[in-house]
Image 1 (tube, rainbow, N blue to C red):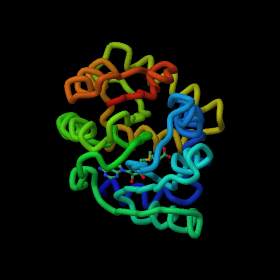
Image 2 (image 1 turned 90 degrees about the vertical axis):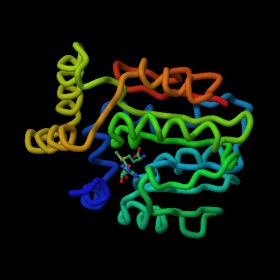
Image 3 (image 1 turned 90 degrees about the horizontal axis):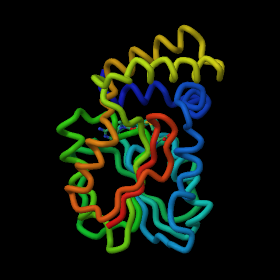
Length: 224
Ligand SMILES: C[S@@+](CC[C@H](N)C(=O)[O-])C[C@H]1O[C@@H](n2cnc3c(N)ncnc32)[C@H](O)[C@@H]1O
């Protein structure tokens, strides 16, 4: 199954599931705007892998007048966003894979990607991340929230143990945990903070700062 089909099937009750299954989801996603400077403003915002729109919804509290472009490979997720934000402001939607996304120069003040870029395998991830600084306007930011660890890292077993305890404490059943781990094996390609930080700095971001970090779950604020 392709990643867009996987998320088509996860659309129903998505928020309830991801809050149970993914550590620190609320801190990474629903508090995303708090990781930006207090007096900073955005007019044009790109949500990469928008899912059902939780990140955009959080940003709208702080930037109600901004234009939002929501991108996702999943038709179901995008359709859910269309319904969620209907009649609420300036929204555009694009169903495509990140690898095929057109990113015109200086087109956004803010790019956000929450728990979506880990679906790109290593080299594709590096190449995609490298394209982002050019798409930002001067003074803009990329907020990147994700699991940041290599699967080959010595602390990877500890990460899995921490994750399992977290998920079980929030009501994840044994059957769901098996599903999460099967999904992780087949569709998730996380990379370490160190490696990705080097890629992002090498790509031209002047600032790459962990704005939130709990174990391996991180929000990077990357400024141009
Ligand atoms: C775990 S969800 C995160 C959704 C949302 N950002 C959130 O935090 O709730 C990952 C999303 O990224 C999308 N996605 C994964 N790989 C993608 C790719 N290569 N191109 C476009 N979208 C992708 C999926 O369809 C899914 O909606």
